[in-house]
Length: 367
Ligand SMILES: C[S@@+](CC[C@H](N)C(=O)[O-])C[C@H]1O[C@@H](n2cnc3c(N)ncnc32)[C@H](O)[C@@H]1O
Image 1 (cartoon, rainbow, N blue to C red):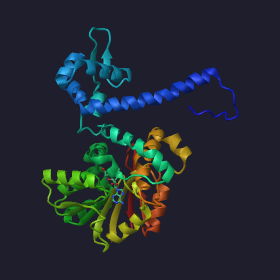
Image 2 (cartoon, rainbow, N blue to C red; image 1 turned 180 degrees about the vertical axis):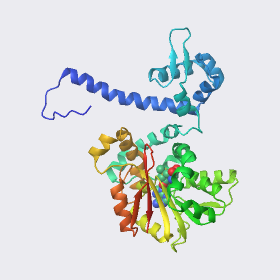
Image 3 (cartoon, protein in one colour; image 1 turned 90 degrees about the vertical axis):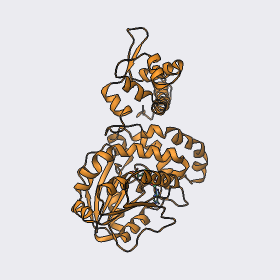
Image 4 (cartoon, rainbow, N blue to C red; image 1 turned 120 degrees about the vertical axis):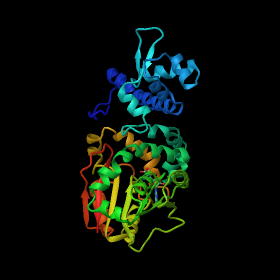
């Protein structure tokens, strides 16, 4: 949609039409995202997948326990957006999910399950109300402003992949870490959110002990709830504002998943990680695959506009939620910057791991 001919001053009627269409397509995506939120929340995808055959909206409404007229309008949105399939050659129309749609929209255990960001869509968009003030004052909002559903949305976004790959792909790709975890060491996960990574690791490595730290009380409540429901006894969660992280080099493994770019003081946090970690310990840094320049981000990342927008509403806002915050934002920690900052904090080894992930880079960092 970008016009590269910046010298033009007259309106071209054809371009005007195309430009308006482009603008309204964005609104169409936003509204359909809201409908995906409803499809998940109301169990419509699960009901359609459960029927396991093309269904009328009356059948779908009955299966989901909803009113047919509302379900029909929703199904028309979803079919028009090509998210669900429709057969219009019969009356009434028949709706169904492709196998790929079942994986992404109706299978929480599938690695491709993708409704997390849609789960927290209302909370993310509600941040718009605070934005004019933030743009004027420069001060953003931390993750707690997105409430419990915000924390659950993050949990749903990141955990399907983690459940499949954290232990066997990521940890096993770190030099000697699995052996140490099996033997029994001390691990901290900073910015632990709803605690998914801590719980997965603690269950798999009963000889090691795990502490998850987060400044979000909503995330910590959710993590505590999940810990209570689990059979895990070698993990706990804490707010670093109430309980300082270790400063005695007692941690063999420190993990940070998708959170350093959200922090107001990422460089200070890296210094704290250096103090927490043993001289022969490992820091696993997982962060969004940003590139060095805006131009590269736009060229190489098909989700760049989504990510810059989420940054305003969530990541950069969090990273500016205290005066003089660093404000890195969603795409603000490319590999070059992560290496430079970790070196400043006293780490001399920095290795980008060979892990294929659509959004994240994985780094093994050592002293
Ligand atoms: C995008 S979430 C990631 C949560 C979790 N690691 C996951 O992968 O599901 C970022 C988290 O970083 C937390 N966070 C931000 N600044 C922090 C800080 N200074 N110390 C600890 N946690 C922080 C936020 O509260 C939020 O829960």
